[in-house]
Length: 205
Image (cartoon, rainbow, N blue to C red):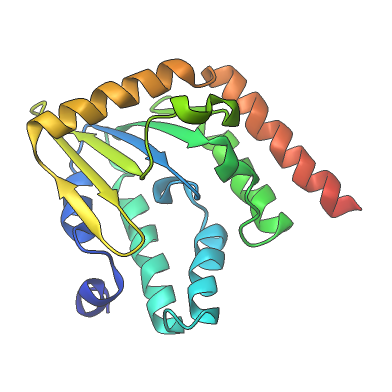
């Protein structure tokens, strides 16, 4: 099913990028508006995709195909040794209530668990960074086993697999600066836990 549907329901450039992602030694992630796909729970991903169905922008079959594709993509990274994953999470992504409180509590718990993995580094870019947050589009950066850099970004409608060395060097510098400005690993987990407790507290009321 995925072979038949991927070019219809997935953004241009994404399948080619994912094929490289499955072989990468290091994966660096930064997304705006949503928690990065590799870090999403199934419930969070499905809640987001079903919103497209309600808007008439996708069919139920397409939404389910996208989620299945994402889960297969996540599973491809469960290899030995696993890739090193560095993710900077925009604080707003943690607070945006995708799927409602129960879905968000489970998603935030998942992030807390991921943060304990030795090959995963999560940091939060706090909202007060304002204009000092350098990216206006989501950015994925891959370092391959041979040291080669590849990147991926996307807009609302299209995706782009980036191979230009100068552009990738610029993205990498900006990403490194973003990591410096972001909260520490421990401080990031504290914030994720605090936001999760806020959702839990609201659910209790």
